[in-house]
Amino acid sequence: MTNRDGWQLHAEVKELVAKTRKLHADHNNYQIGQLAKQLRELLREYAKLRPPRPDRCFSLILFQTLRFPQELEWLPAFMKWAGLQSFRAEDYRAQPVSNDKTFEPLIETAARKVAKIALDSNDVSHKELAIQLIDQALDKAEIQASNWLCYRKALLLHSLGQIEEAKQLLMFFVKDNRNQYWAWHALAKVVGDSDRTLALALCAKACLTCRDLNFGVNVFEELSRLAAAQGQTQLAKWAATQAFTIRQNNRWQIPQSLRELLNAGWYEQGENLSHPEAVLTSIAADAEKVIWSSSPRYDANYLGIFITANGKQMAKFGVFDQENCQEISGSARELLHNLNLVLGEPVTVTVDNSGDRLTAVVVKKRDYGQPFDQLERLYGILDRHRDGKAFVYLNPDQHCTVAYADFPQIQMVLPGTAFEVICARHRERINPYKLVTSTFVENANICIRIGTLRLHSKGFGFVEDVFVPPNLAEMLHEGQMVKFICAKKLDTKKNKLGWTAIALAI
Image 1: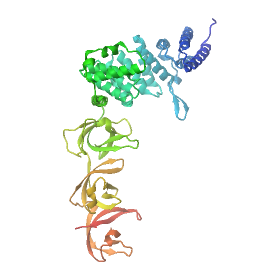
Image 2: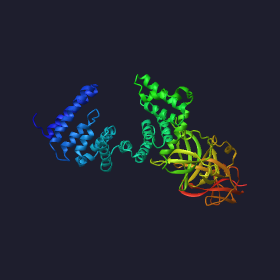
Image 3: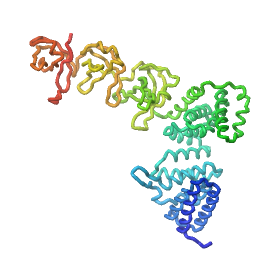
Image 4: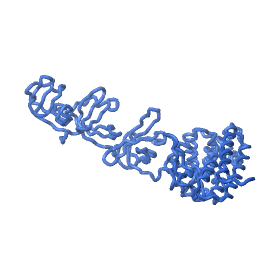
């Protein structure tokens, strides 16, 4: 064989990978295995050249190697030979290919694939190298999916016995992947040795979020083992049966670990579980709590349930934030299990504050406080009725709309009646949750005026500087001494504030 330089080897590696990818599309696994051996020999020949690093030729050879469609068990050894210093500045940069698509940096791809292979390796140095590669990528590269690198790092740390570090990393990952069963399962495996009760809750959550049972077969087996160890034989029997049925339906082998569960004494003697989803949901409540253990908590009040446009039930809560009470929401199914809450009930809400808005993730009843104690209390007067709604005046910039459907008694209340509006805000809107009739109190925006009415030919009138709208003026006559409840409102024609009569004062 003639000696070839790095660029010649790169050309051969590129051709081999292209051929392999075509075979992969045709599911020709035997030939792919043979080509993997050829690729390894090419890389060994390249290593004998003792190429400089960092080097563009190496980066291109590595890029092609990472495109190989099957896992290369020797990839960590190759990267160990190459070393962390083999990456050029360009290898840390993401590569935009269109307006909405960007290729991850070469070092990110290498870190992710090496980590996955090293996890199954018995070589501790390969695991340590993979962690170093991930750390270097996270520190210096334009990472496109940092959560996945953190996930891989957590699994590697767990395999090295660094349980607490692995647990903390997985906590962040699970928060971003709460609907992925394997994320919950990974965290269950990490905490399994130190906290089996929590591991059971996490496995239960994994089962609830598993949409394709074929993929989750190992989760059910793990759940059975954990439940049996904690004396929950009904759940253990159900989970073991699930695992067996999935394997039987797919004609998969029944592993010895599952056979041991099926042959255990508790399995034969145990009763069947009649409502497995309810049991799983109850146990899984602790799984949600643990991943949000370091998240902020607020005193709040329960404000009921609403349904989104796509039919999802959401629970609302009022949380006092700085000067106002804001509405936040979260999945009613996840938050309200085993909780019987009434409107306004005091609760404590744990929130996810990582996004643009706060999201409720855990709710618990408060044993202190009063109903509606976190909501705002705003003083106002009933302004008018129209189209099945009452409008409560608060100040020149704010009013509160009260629907008859929500507060039927409001239909009988006369304009000018004073209220304390107990409310929360959704964006800029003020939503009332309780109305309490109040004693009339004058302030800078609400007053009582007494004077002689001057009528205009167009149907409205004035009492000094107070505008009297037609609906009030038509009930009165020129020169009549009147007493009005008034509010300060914006005159849109003059673009300035002025007094407007709301109702006759008694």
